[in-house]
Amino acid sequence: MKFSAHLMEIVQPQWTTMLAHPFLQQTAAGTLAPGRFEAWLRQDYVFVREEIRVIGGMLAKAPLEHHRLVGNFIPALYTELDMFEAEAQDFGISLDDIEPAPVCHAYSMFLLATAYTRSFAESFTVLYGVEKAYFDSWTQVKQQQTQPSPYQRFIDHWSGNAFAGAMQEVAQALDTLAQACGNAERTRMQELFRLTLRYEYLFWDMALTGGTWPV
Ligand code: MP5
Image: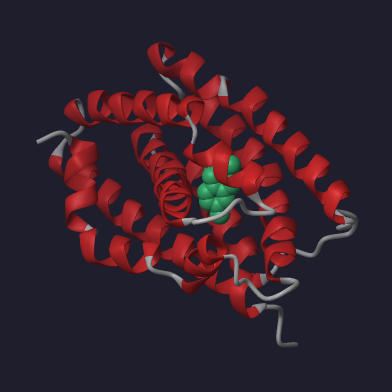
């Protein structure tokens, strides 16, 4: 079995729980309370901005054969930031002075630390988890929605063909990388993948419940 498929198999129950998160269900049903999408948008904007630094760290370690794939994330993420900025303007949402909420802060620091302190294969596994979580989450929203959503641009972006193609390339590169890893490294990759999924769940939770700093 390919390593990317193996990862999905070992986290299957938690992955299913993540996809059942009320934030996603309510986004699909069009019943999200006012302010909740705004909370997600502001926090995810900060997250994507930080992700560019993560890619910078990964590029420094990327084997030449994977350099272009990783490097291509930088213009793609800037294009995503443009999408956030355009949508925020349409919704009248300010993107100024956003304080990262605890989960957003912890998750982006986890990505950054992984990129700078772990092997390339390990941080690439986390990148796969980040992308796969959004691909599956927004694809499910797209499949479940029965009417157009005010947030359609986001739904279409992460469930569309371009993102699906990039997703496939990432999965293939991960499978190639994993073939050259020993058992100990593969075990660490699995642990990091599970952590990534846990953070993804928490990110939806934060969007739905606020999750701001208590003190
Ligand atoms: C992604 C994201 C998708 N934007 N935010 C979270 C919390 N998880 C995953 O990654 P990308 O690189 O923005 O497509």
